[in-house]
Image (cartoon, rainbow, N blue to C red; front, side, top):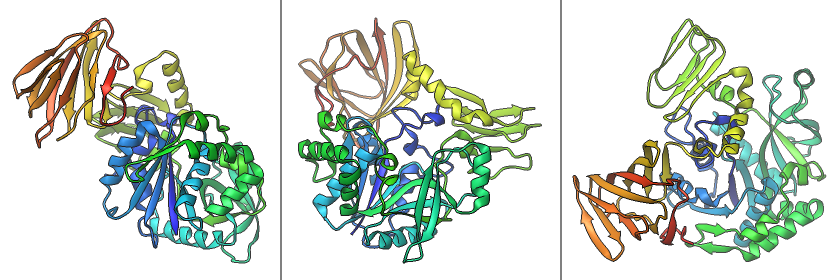
Length: 476
């Protein structure tokens, strides 16, 4: 039994302002209808005997992840289980938890571990490589996917390969090399026996658990403690990892904890095309350039511009007389950077976080399990939102200490609870929620409910919410 394990926990700070803490890189769409997470799941679907898939992600992303899976064509009959981390602890604890979960399903299972934010153009070649890796893993090997380098890239780790193993499809690992400088990267490319470390793996459950027991026994022991204290919900659709014991796991990568130490590690050189989309420069390389080397996603116009990438969501962006730039325009934040400095975008996120700025965490439009809200305008003592509630969905029963709310229904019908009253509000009607009032909003209709909310008060932060009841488990 082959079980894909998708690691979907990274925040992708180098891809701000599109990737943010509450809407990270795996949910991004790059020139297509599917997100990176959906693309990762989709390329696993043709693998033989695929019945289950596991996604390791943060508990905050569970509703968006479930929506991504449920709306992906071809997943009918495929069981998806989310292993929900209360906080990120790196890849070694994540893979240990996934292996313990898979062991509870089938001790003989083989795991195909895939980051959710990679882009692989040749999916057929990837699937062939995955099948070969699964066969190789049956002898106890820990199989890494190595990517044949096409340039002296300094942003990736490298693996030096040794002699071929008996199967002939994989090679021994001689050593791991951290991200090199340009001169060493050129040497590796010329040598011909170095590959990029993709961060994708294949091994049996027993092989990885055995390797963890030998080389990182503390990680495995703490993972077993966390597994024993975790709870499974919704017919195995969610595994809520215990916060205290999982948080005590050592924060360490699987490479450092196991792969650089174990003897049974082999690498499978692969040429299926691959990018970890680690910067906006890498994003730009996914698009076909014009004669001047310019690329765009969204509406853009270039005049005397060269080697410039523009991404725009809502409006036309014109680039005139510029060279080697990245321009990423979102409704509430604009990034302008040199392509050569694309790795430094994460410093912007660090500074925003240090100032407590919402743009580090949230977009202007924020996804919630019941729908979305969009901040239209805000200022001293007021904030205006557009709220859209899906058919049949319900917000929590809640109250606010510092703000009142005026609700105006634009379309659909709202079912409103305000203290001891329950009533309907139709289109072109409104209602008022006072400070301290216990209230709930529901959409009882079959069409989306759209309304405008006007908040007034001394403090309008999203953390001024006291939840009493919530169908999505957020109360308390």
